[in-house]
Length: 174
Image (cartoon, rainbow, N blue to C red; front, side, top):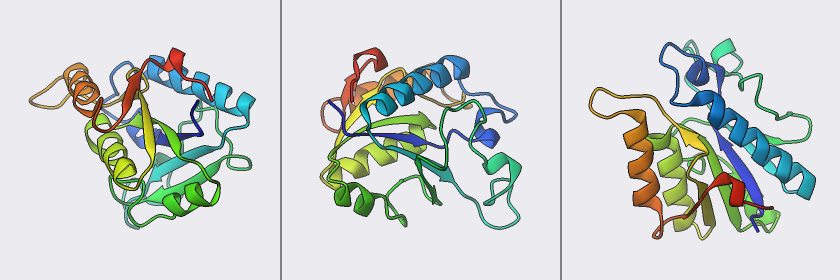
């Protein structure tokens, strides 16, 4: 059973930007189901917001920086934090918070697969945390060289084993 849920960069500027993420509605529904299970079990929910410099489209407080309004999280009860790098750990106090709460196993979901999901999974393991990656709980956009579906499939395969326990979201409990 997982200790905590970490949701990465489910923000208006990424979720509803000019290039929509692959299967975004399904991924949002999957994440909201995991939020419901975590809440029911009393597991903490951490919400990362990628934050750009002042004046950028995703500067703190800007409309695009806000968490997508249909994501079932609440700043009053969930643990929000800002990051400026692909890793949720670099320059944040996430590792300290997790250790203080004696949380060891994280479910990691959100966006973008090849950047913040990949980096955070790898760094979490380097820091001694165990990671569960729902193969159907993260997404990205098509690139000039690869479709989003291919990027997701590649990262699910590459991260599985050495870095994460890869499962379907339906198999996860808190």
